[in-house]
Length: 470
Image (cartoon, rainbow, N blue to C red; front, side, top):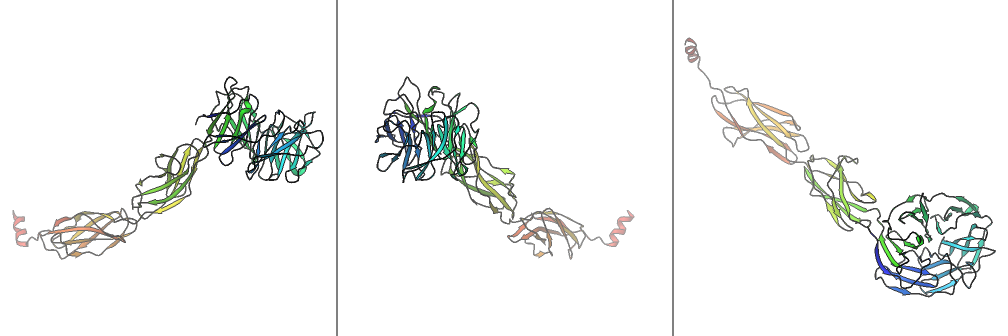
């Protein structure tokens, strides 16, 4: 993927620009007293209400879980970062909070629920702590403990709402304690951002973004392309992101700011559909690519006699909503096979559930071998059951004076690869007989080719003695 310039910003500002998470296809942008809404589909900017606040370093926009409100630290009425501002999207209105108690000011915030925020606050000595603010009652709770740390320009919270994360430390709510988390990979810097689920950072060398998941503290790195045309002097322009899209403000001071975007490639989602055209020796597994994760995927199937599979089909390039199929051959009749669909993009491979199909029993194949033990009135007919079609067969012979045969021998139960024979009697000497092997399973009979033999000639005793005297 690559970064795409969406639009120029509708205002001129060379300081920090902050973005909200994406909500209902729109993103909210603030810079000093500018406040706008941008529709990522129509690419239309809409100016919104902005309250009377002074310039500030920290105006990260945090989105409530229900997507109805935004919150940011603010210097309302000249009080240096002493408040939060709460924005209600439906009414396009800002409401300032009560002043933070004591000699503290806010730096970043994150919603614990739709009415409660945890706010990193600091004093003039560089100490930080987490305070709780409740919107409905406009009340603050400032707890006892604090910690010296780097300014928490990023802020997040785990799903259990038990741990609040900042730039270098995490706060355990239940016991009011702080601990260094050491989660930031080397040569990265945290971004000025509020995201309930993630702590966003970028590489110092090329501004390539990544994030740390608040739930398990795992690192997801290099999920976007390099930002080689971004100025390293303005790293905080990286702002909006969610599971599908990241939007970034251009940091080149020689040009007006731009809004840029790139799709975040996520894992594919794939469904294993039922097999079709199931024959005794071949079948066609089917699959659906439910989600390509943002780029075309290579789709195929694993298959085999067990859920360990062991065989992989060729792949086909597919995108979201498309189906795919592969015919596999060389199967054995009357056997159950396992298969599952898979889809691969640059994030890795995803699999559908395991499914099975069972090949049907096939008509047997049998060979009529040469007759042996030829005598005037006796002969031995021979055959080979090449393939039983998936179950044991009753094997025997048809025989007679012509290809109409007319006589059937007793049968023997045989399986693939076994031979069988029958002695027939009551023949006429020096007579040609036709015969063919057959094998019967539940599908029906299979026949070998017609063969013939001549019974032995009877020689009289007088003729034999005369021949001996010669």
